[in-house]
Image (cartoon, rainbow, N blue to C red; front, side, top):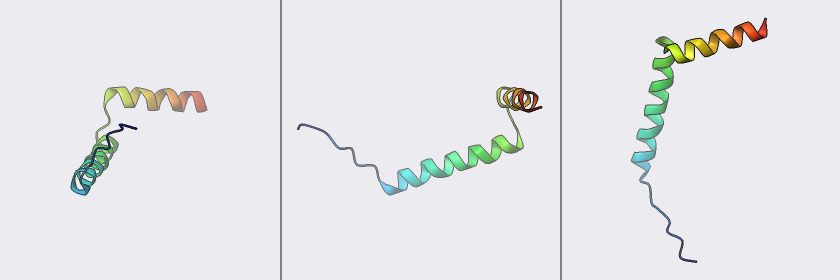
Length: 47
């Protein structure tokens, strides 16, 4: 009954979405060792 609802401005949500999108693009161009190792492992398991 005493729940607090936090208002998140639309601009903040849009900023977070753009940051996630930019990180995904950057990661696709410059993969980190961690994600590159995961991709290699996945391709070996598929074969």
